[in-house]
Length: 270
Length: 291
Figure 1 (cartoon, rainbow over the protein chains, first blue to last red):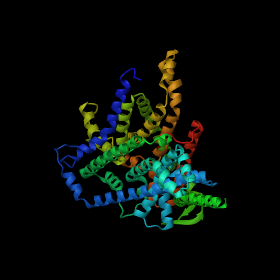
Figure 2: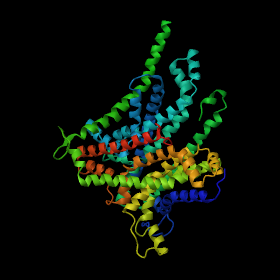
Figure 3: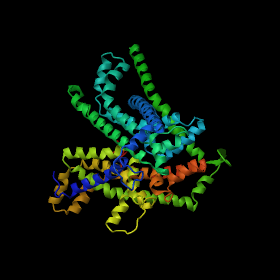
Figure 4: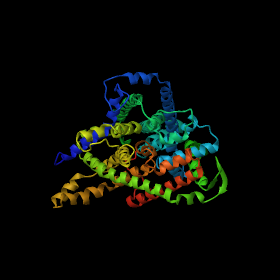
């Protein structure tokens, strides 16, 4: 269907453009010779060289990645097993636990941060990587859980039943049939969780220790106290990484379509 | 026969085992902290550091003090302002997007995803560059002779509003789009053919059918906007104090944890009330466009 006028398309275009302006400005000024972002004094790559000399930033990057990988992996295991098991068991507490487990992405992040900070200090846990991983895992689980659950609902149960009838052990059925069918949902849930983890500021502010910095925390403190174009360079590289990740996600989202050659996966849905 | 039953029993035990990690983690690290927050909000603050196990309602009484009530009111006002602006800007976007051809829908979605996945801090930093004195906007305004002197927009209320709207807009767009995409536009055409004005056709058909998307967009905007303290922190300086900033200050600077807990409980109650209203209004349980 065609729009009667061009106006809606102009609106879409202008708004999309405006969304990119702040990002492009950050990128542009990463190549600025001058330290002040109000003056443009020529093209330079010196902020990138300075960035690569900064060991604290590499350490923060390492922490961010370790945190993101461990949290999304644990969320992947706990969330997938949980979503799968919840369809099988018949506990009275089922819906209550399900509700509580999705709370971390339902309530304002600041409350979650506050709650974790108070609770971890009650337990006497040392603030740092351990507390960060626990907090991040908590808000990563719902993403995996919800996506896997949605996929389970649309899945053909007869395959697993047939395998069971033919004498396969439940464990084998899970690994040979259920898991491969769930894989796209698990992977996209974990990617989503990973993206949320490496971008998180609010919760990390509360649960990190004095000596543990993540990249978002480092940028946050710099933005508050005063930035150098080194941060622009860092942001530009992070944006490039985002582009790669988006491309990768789009590529992953495409693969199941090609795989739909097998006739039996017809009802598996997207 | 009995072997079969034995097998089934073992299978059930295996299945119970799969939910065990979720149960343990949820009870220990989600429910536990939340319960502790509620308990903490009724405890007494120790002189210098820590908490005394004495029951009190003082923390809640403190919230009723004019200074703190005003902070709550400010936060609600900012959240409402941002939400209204997000609706006004985001709704048409999602709606028009649903009318695009399949190819352009995909392209627009991709173009939306990239800034959405970009770190919110990078995007905030861009706004600092635009807003600061002697920044882009300043120069633009002076070149257009709108103002003679340099204006400082950074660290003002409008700057915070822009930051909020910018951060939350994608949620509204996705929610409205997912709802508008299912809309059968021939219904709108039919209404028009039967003599309804474009306005009436929109209000009675399009808006009504996309209302679930709009409502979930409102929840997805309003709830987080109550807690995005870092936007107010970075773009508002110390001028804009929200409940989020207050909680952070009470935790990290004043070390009055029971009061911070009471503030969090109040904020949680406020957002829960909002979610409850949303559920009543829309009659759906799952938030559309969330995943």
